[in-house]
Length: 246
Ligand code: IPE
Ligand code: IPE
Ligand code: MG
Image (cartoon, rainbow, N blue to C red; front, side, top):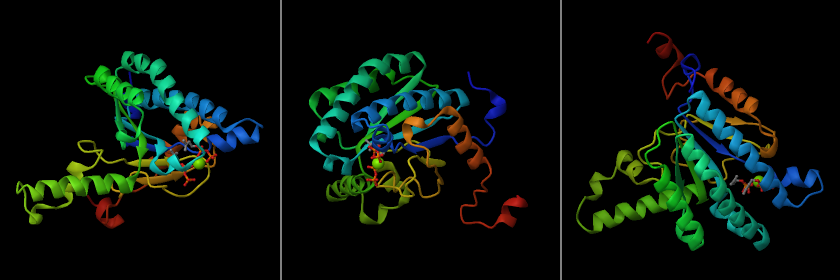
């Protein structure tokens, strides 16, 4: 159960770019694949911490549309790791009342992996404690282009007209439709960039960058990011004075 006293000003939706696995492994003289394996432990702990704190949605960037350009052996080992992790973790997530959803270009994934993702979504569909969204083969530009294509089909079929296209309609065609946009975006691993993650959805997210490499990221680091978030004044274009007098 989450502690209600901690829920005030809590980000409802946290998104994380889990970066730094390769460097973590390299620093220890290991192969990059070992860093990805070590990263799974951080992921497990962060999912549990966010659920305990009462976060409603946690979106994790696991594999980008650009990560296909990595050496074939790394791509193969990452896909193998996803399958393995899904096999072990979905029952645990289900027991913990966590709903799992995957976003990204699934048609690029192997059939066994596509089936496993579908099975995990079906198994956990009615869970309520937290929603875990995992972005695999995901790119923010792909997401926007996909939405545009879906809308074009609607226009072409005469079901809507071009004049009906507005922000609300586009949002209904993005992968995160139906979910409130992330309040807080965390990137580990030291880079200060978005790397084609949720371009549409992070318009007003607070951005938190840390040098900690993903396998070293601990529950106290999530707490640090939430503390940072709670110190921000979210103005959404208004002035500070307007918000103070509200
Ligand atoms: C993030 O860690 C995981 C994926 C992109 C799959 P990296 O593999 O990018 O680690 P670094 O950035 O090379 O250290
Ligand atoms: C972003 O990390 C993608 C994921 C964490 C899955 P990258 O390591 O791929 O990003 P770049 O290439 O450094 O921008
Ligand atoms: Mg990286």
